[in-house]
Length: 293
Image (cartoon, rainbow, N blue to C red; front, side, top):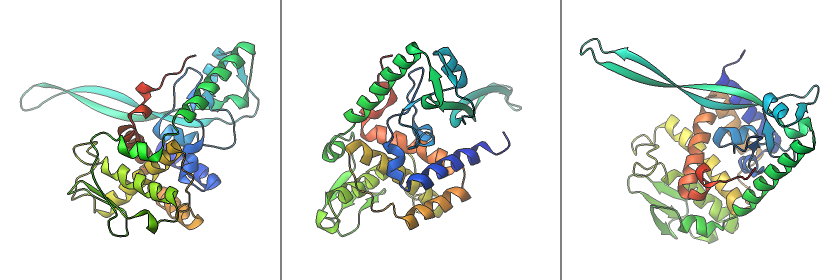
């Protein structure tokens, strides 16, 4: 491809973010699903986050053809990515032992929304089934915020009514939250709570995303903040929270500048945000999602 793949991925998320002006709205689309029943996760969820189409169903050119359809003339595809695992063998020059080296290569493929295509009756029936399953999944995800917090496995120590600023302290594995009176409304309170809860998943006894001494490093801190922003936005959508005050034009503009300067960050952060949400709410993990096709 002409441009670096990371740059293309970042640009697509930036385009989506500029259109909707909210992290939360990037997660609000129904769970994107392929024509073969695969639910898109992490960065691909964000890449397919758009209010352009009402259908959550996507497919490659070949998948569309295999399901009785054809892509309409002039339609443009969307990018989705995956990590390809590569293994090569080398011999240690000192010991003579054979070693296997594992590498991961970011690859891509192109998909179309089914609204960009024309299908026969069998294809339409399958799309309807997939759409209903995706909408049902979204409805089932409307778990109350307190249940999300209260049911988190192996949670940090939570101290309520502390100070006037939400915070997570990695060295103590302590999450501190001010009283609700310091927030505009209850949705704002839970949005901040989710942000700190996502941070807590980075602890070494959970997902081991950071070390306490690295958490304050400027670059690592910024990357971790992006993980927390994306993860909290996702949990807000899961809980049905409507709070969106932080997503002002200036706030989003700041993140857009960061992403443009660091094109690999969005792929890194989206994957970790997804894993953080799945740790807090295990029901969100792909293996717990079933789609009957």
